[in-house]
Length: 187
Length: 383
Image 1 (tube, rainbow over the protein chains, first blue to last red):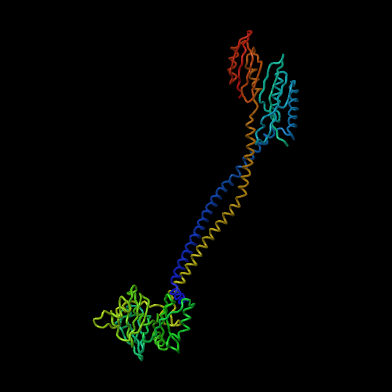
Image 2: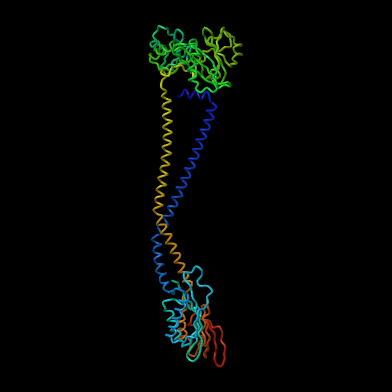
């Protein structure tokens, strides 16, 4: 076998040399390719390790975020109780008017007008709730007005007093004008 | 004490033992002499501790042929082996042969050397029986192929019934021819174009160089001319060991590379597994963060609405602190403002001014005297 190889080498020296060079180049290219792949894998592993470390840090925040979410939920539930609920805006507007009239009557105030007021924007496009605005005018004693305000402030649902004016009307009576805003969520 | 192989030249009727580095130190062994004892005595006499022998066959016992085979000859060895009886004058019996090949323009140039086994192998057997290991069996001319002439064209003239002229290019034999008469240096030189010509016994005052000079160097015979049959050759332990080491190195390299890639793969799998384990928790954290963000949006929106103004408290403070002779005609809280505008009148502006100090962030905007009353306008900033 060795002698055959020797004969072949003696006969085809140039071919052997060229073949050897080609083989060497092939080995060098294979080695380069292999080294590149090896480095790529090392970089990939390094990235994966960094990613895993970040994921672990994120996962470690789980108890904290659960606690924060619990507190937020409590706060959110309290706030949501302040919203009016109904199937439509008209229904909610109606229920607000009924409530106001009831409280006005209880405060011995005479209603002159109560009407929904057009609202240019109701909480913005991403708001979790909508608003309905009302303008109320009534006449009655000043202490009746404070009683009405107290009832308004104690109400389960929140009505925001945006503006008001109180002026003398006659004898012991004042004329009250209020701009109110109610907050609601459909459903 | 040298351990170089003993040089033994097989001649037609006898053997010639020669010192490996002192060619003039020779001993002839006759056909009837006992070889083993003679070799032992020769070695002892000249301080040699040879365990191997390099055998050379006198050119007188060999046949030389130069031939050309077609370039497309598929297997030179088989071709030569098949044509051996045609190429050599040895029609019967086993033939020992060796050859070298050179790629030429017209095909493969072959230098073939052959000899009768029956006249050579018995001597080889006797040498082996003496306890020496045989390194190789070469034509006598190969004894003088040394590194001294490896870079030049040179020639030698060997003795015999007809002198033999051999021309070399470095370590490679180029031509061999017989000299029917004693060769003339200038003719031989022009014929061979050799830079140096060695003669086994140079005539006096001739430019030939002494062939024995080359005998002092270690011979570098061409392996192609090794006439020793395969069954006589010693296993090449060095080559076997080197081959084994090379294979072991390759296997070790493959093992190391495979082991490294295996460890990388195992590490990747462990990382993937750990990532898969932590992924649900991370996903839950992300989901909860999103819920928290949305919840916070709602809370922030509600916080932006703000609380109702403390009008009841304001009325209480006004009732408590304003002088009893002060009357309020109008309260106004404009939209998007926290300033309550109050219009009224009093008959004691000094007392009113003093009372304003106790109402907190209050400003008297204007006063106007009319019908014995002082009409005033003030602003109270709600907390």
